[in-house]
Image (cartoon, rainbow, N blue to C red; front, side, top):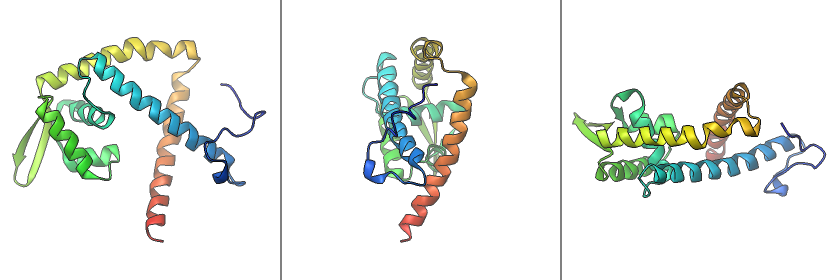
Length: 172
């Protein structure tokens, strides 16, 4: 892994750099550009899979519903994907339903969503393109699966920290 310690922190907002943790500012900038790259990747991959009109949230929700081949409730989708505004997820679900990628079933007051055959095929094609274009690129970049797993653990921990900080800020 390349170190930038001789260059100094690489940040987007130098005025936010804390003397206690300049690394957190570096992480935030890296997270921002990684998130933008990831969203661009998802949209381009799904377009290559034949669905050019889906946004990143639509794609995440489609994959979440397709996971484990069982119905999902809106609340569970939002919880797992950390979507605070259910209207965003509802809009994506309507779009996915209109494209015949997702179907819904009402039971009592709850709607349960599942992928259609067309939705399952789109997810499978996305997976195939992901294997070809993304997974095969890990080696040349010198990325090791164990390091990626460690990074995922750190990011999940930081996600909890940011969620708690958001709650604290909302109470000010």
